Image 1 (cartoon, rainbow, N blue to C red):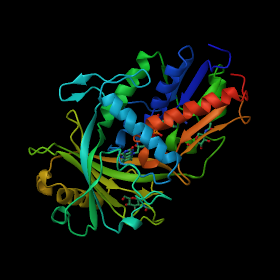
Image 2: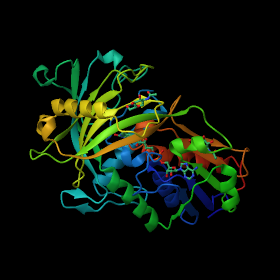
Image 3: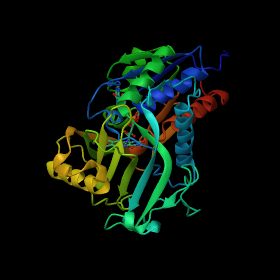
Image 4: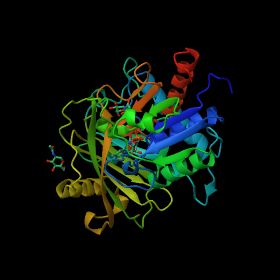
Length: 379
Ligand SMILES: Cc1cc2nc3c(=O)[nH]c(=O)nc-3n(C[C@H](O)[C@H](O)[C@H](O)COP(=O)(O)OP(=O)(O)OC[C@H]3O[C@@H](n4cnc5c(N)ncnc54)[C@H](O)[C@@H]3O)c2cc1C
Ligand SMILES: *[C@@H]1O[C@H](CO)[C@@H](O)[C@H](O)[C@H]1NC(C)=O
Ligand SMILES: *[C@@H]1O[C@H](CO)[C@@H](O)[C@H](O)[C@H]1NC(C)=O
């Protein structure tokens, strides 16, 4: 190890972003001490912790023809390597029966849109194409007779990913433990108090999601919640062989008037089926909205006939999560000079934290490497 390498890395946050970042850094700097500090860790179910509430699947919303698409593309490839049993940053997934211990699997999807394609936000800036068309195996148009009413067009995705978030977070955590990453549970009200507590920290990575708003020394007022409601329901007797999504025209509309966007994600490993959902910006409410919940259930049954009638669906839990959104997109950048150690910010992934997780972690690594070669910091 050269003196240029960070020897004491502290990561604030143990969501999918903090944990993935910790794994990449620990693998790259094997002699560094890597510590993840967080108020919430895998297994917790708090509205302040977004990761357990995600659906989750890979369905890129990036259309910048640039860095955001790259984050999702890298992650798509890493998910594929993991599912195929390959080594990803020193992590390997063990096959278990029909699934694997990480709770991640490939699956096709039908996605529907209720507006002309130019208005959906799925076309990339500059190219006017769907950038992940080939990545997911070549999108096909869904024939008219298979389109629900009020739908303008649909796309058949041969293969993308679905994630049982509870299993995946636990897997990330156990990978972290097996690499010698330290996990510390603590809540910090400021960065200053964290650095006082952990004085040997030579590099700090800020993966606090929405939690950041409560850090007193800097507040990023671009950060806001996008509330989402989902239902976890029992697996129907008729197996569901694909995911469904009905994207309302919200992506580019600043108002996002209709908070419902529907999806049905069967989760692997007895994870049940997640029915979603809603996207309601700037709403912190942790109270279940029964009317919205009923609408989600009915719309999902229309989308996915295998579920049967709404009244026959067994609801296991009612979930509310707050996506850590940010005006201008996620902030992944280094801040030097302000604190006694360099800080890499990494928050604001909104509804894309899983599908961009590995790409994000690799981007953080690039920033860490740059921080060192530029000699800005005494690491
Ligand atoms: C309903 C819903 C559906 C979703 N579906 C998908 C999907 O299909 N695909 C997808 O990719 N994404 C999806 N998402 C988004 C995804 O869940 C988030 O983008 C992701 O979980 C964000 O992860 P994070 O690590 O940034 O934040 P979090 O998971 O919120 O983690 C933040 C961490 O920081 C800690 N922390 C914060 N402040 C402090 C502090 N001051 N001191 C100590 N610790 C602190 C917290 O305790 C926690 O450990 C969905 C989200 C919701 C709500
Ligand atoms: C960490 O990120 C949050 C946004 O999530 C920001 O408000 C906060 O100021 C950052 N904390 C530090 C210590 O830089
Ligand atoms: C927030 O969401 C809840 C649940 O859907 C709803 O009842 C409430 O009116 C919303 N609040 C705001 C300010 O929009």
